[in-house]
Image (cartoon, rainbow, N blue to C red; front, side, top):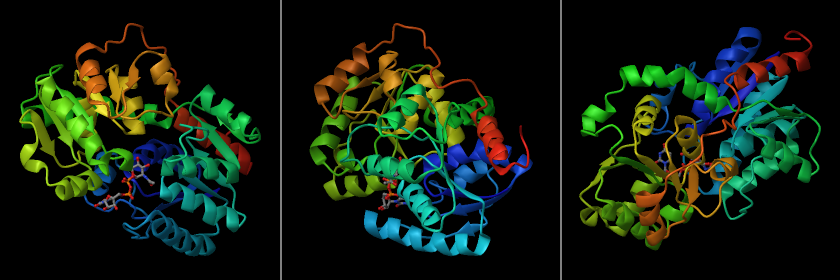
Length: 359
Ligand code: UD1
């Protein structure tokens, strides 16, 4: 079977790594990098850390408004698909690259497989939520990480082609956590005591583009008095420049460039708590058994909250401070994201679909 896999943004590099390894055992994969994330620390380092094969196509779309970025990717992927004529296109998650990849394929009547299908935050003000909903509705194979995701799809009338396979991020994390522990020097680099510091990331427009939100988050982090490792996403850096607030940043916050996968894994695994508005990091915190404080009012990873390992605090200074001090999970985790091996299960289902392999 000939598959075109579309990636473009940081979280997709992580998800594509274990799946690529599996599907290349049985299928031909053409890897397309849209170029949505292009800075070396947002892209190249992930290809290196995760040993992802070189992309066959680099579309170089770069930044732009949502319409521009999505439209540009859509047009450029179409050319690749017309040339390669794949049997199926694989897309991951919820970014503009996901949506554009799915739309270009479906318009050319090429079946679409969506990895991480069925997630919903029920917040349509987030661009990612629109991308999730539309992508799911044009997909032929929907690979769900959780039962909640399967239920969400059923509620929208999608039941055909739906497979509960578990989460490919579990595969990425399990494969790499020991490599990270051995190779990464991130704790030494910043003098971080194991179990004695916080990790924070912020990149959602709802936070980064609103000074009151950023001020509340940074003030609460300052109040904590603990060392805080803060790898800054390019969007966040741009906004902090515009707000002109670097000089008033609390002294306990250690600002750094975005980290590669192995350094981030090692930093998260040894943190006391993680504060984030990223979707992927909420899940990684859960898998690593580190309490997560989510800087949003909603989440698509509801199970982490229900299981007591994640708390939603929005950008409320008081709630953030309180959670830093007092939030402490009581229950043992129930491993809701399934066993290792989602990538293998997906490859097998793709094989069945092609009728060429895999039982
Ligand atoms: C995107 C995804 C989000 C994902 C996140 C991971 C969408 C709608 N959002 O958000 O789901 O969780 O990636 O990081 O697709 N920029 C750079 N260099 C880069 C990349 C971006 O400078 O390598 C800057 C640009 O100014 C750009 C801004 O960051 O305008 C935002 O990038 P964009 O890809 O639009 O969205 P993210 O916020 O990264």
